[in-house]
Amino acid sequence: MAKIAFIGLGVMGYPMAGHLKAKGGHDVTVYNRTAAKAESWVKQHGGQSAATPAEAARDADFVFTCVGNDDDLRSVTIGPDGVLAGMKAGAVLIDNTTASAEVARELYEAAKARGCDFIDAPVSGGQAGAENGVLTVMCGGDEAAFEHARPVIDAYARMVGLMGPAGAGQLTKMVNQICIAGLVQGLAEGIHFGKKAGLDIEKVIEVISKGAAGSWQMENRYKTMNQGKYDFGFAVDWMRKDLDIVLSEARRNGAALPVTALVDQFYGEVQKLGGKRWDTSSLLARLEK
Ligand SMILES: NC(=O)c1ccc[n+]([C@@H]2O[C@H](COP(=O)([O-])OP(=O)(O)OC[C@H]3O[C@@H](n4cnc5c(N)ncnc54)[C@H](OP(=O)(O)O)[C@@H]3O)[C@@H](O)[C@H]2O)c1
Image (cartoon, rainbow, N blue to C red; front, side, top):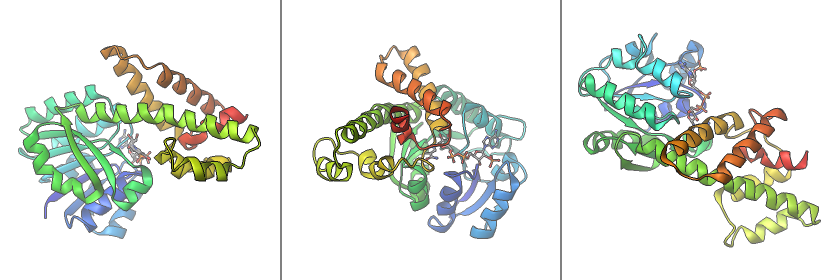
């Protein structure tokens, strides 16, 4: 049993911290900016809550963060009450936020300067993956720190991989989002075309999902897309945040991402349609407006 701090009990963090307590059997202290969520987590899972990230991280062997973006992450880590102000030497900071590779490298250096380790560990698998403890975790950092942290991360993961040095986890998550962006647009266009052609979409997908066009997005999203339901899942606002990180990194490394850039603009149009919190499959709503 390890002593763990978990910062950020959102859609993802709340169940992930729960698995560290229930499945991992660890001693978990949580911190959430909105204290009511931390209170309800403790009521549900046991453990304890702290008033600041630094306080939660004191004496912890492993400190997890899962907040919104780069700035949020900086404020809960290197801010005055951030976890690094409380962490003991030898402890490992594991960040599950989807953030830039740049902030990952910055936090790696800041952790090292305090005698701690840092692993960027963004996740894929969505709310359902977090609730069922079957996330894919893409890690960047030192091998020894990764091997030390891996059995703990396993509590909420189905697949955990070390992709390279600090920032490599975030870069891998960027590849993941690039692959999803183009794919969802293709799926939206396929369904849009099928409807215009007068086909029965249920029948079409039943057949083509077993062939070369099949994908997780097709299996899990075609029914709700066909019904025009988008009030669930990974929000368009989050996707735009991720694609902004992707496109900035591409400007730096020279990668050509024409389709990703276009789909990012399409998501901008979905936001204008009122779809900021809609699921990313709502690219179809833009075609049908
Ligand atoms: N949702 C998904 O399907 C999914 C899938 C993969 C990856 N992700 C990534 O995982 C991360 C978290 O996503 P989520 O869906 O859990 O988001 P969320 O439900 O909006 O939760 C965000 C959490 O971060 C906290 N937070 C945000 N800014 C903060 C700040 N400046 N200081 C302190 N706490 C702060 C929030 O506290 P409050 O409760 O006080 O607001 C909340 O606990 C994001 O980077 C997202 O891109 C999400």
